[in-house]
Length: 484
Image 1 (cartoon, rainbow, N blue to C red):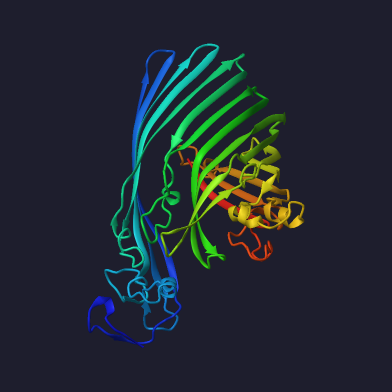
Image 2: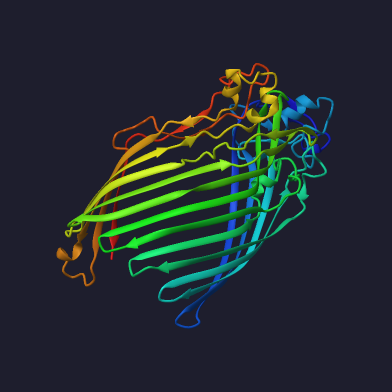
């Protein structure tokens, strides 16, 4: 095959075997720089003051490169979806109008090519005040975050907002924290802490389709987070107990999902805003010494993590910036996909001869599959009667089965000075061995998600089954180290 006007140069022709399919690598090259400074000051015997500043700069370079031409001589750097949708256009299918009709070979870059620059500067201060019966602290942070996109290719579909530096998105944020500890006596304490903060949105969720253009979601704003905890601590020689209750409210999160939409027969960008969550629950831990080096430890975390409101989604086709749909997602009271209950109990023995062994049984429950927002819209259940079981099949969130593991860890520290008398300081050769999932439970589902594709025509929930992640069966690690 002969390709004419390669790289947009009239008369520049290349002849050879053109690959229609290739293997490609999707690369994210990251450079990150951090600067931190801290000032510690002891005002008097009761007051400690700490302050600091930080600056972070990160540059991510996103691009694709040819891994294997699968027998061909070259590949055309063209947008094949645009060729289908805009067959009469000579520019829409170009991934880079600055080098039209570009051919690439193994190791060359192709397709999208852009940078994301992120900067964050912050200053903070904290004061800790300590008295005989009560301690308390207050702290504050003020930060400034900015990010922007730089396109390294002028995309044929979006020639006016794909190349060069985009608008800079700026966010001022703040955090306020405070807490107090009341010392009942030398071993028993009560504590309470609280915080209110704002956080800049993540750039991954701000840009609607950064591979092709610099458009961002409407009305970008910072997340708002309110959090509180309170509890009791016992710290005795043979018994340690910690009991905590917590509450967190998160508001105004955003997200962007990109997937193939069967109704539009194209890839779409599903930009979601108004994501609100609520987390609350309690945690308990205990460590008790029961006999000469033998102790029992146990812990529990029981929480409820919900989406607390309806969400809004704007849908754009990937090859067009036109808005094709606005969806209201009925997400209220759906569960956040994370284990909401976890329990553990174990025995730990530590010998005075420098060896130890620990065995733990772990149990997880109340785990939920990440849900597909398209199935929680009016369009997904349109025409289905309220009492039809199919309606529940579409709307209900899948709860995963409870899971368990049994793990064991052992270690031995060999004092080398007994063998090598010339060593002046104590040197240890440390051996560690861990075995996870001793019972070889291979049915552990650690998480998963409903596919974003949905059969709107037939309402068949099994056409695109959920994807689930499974844990390893029995596995182990061993290590040898030197400590001195």
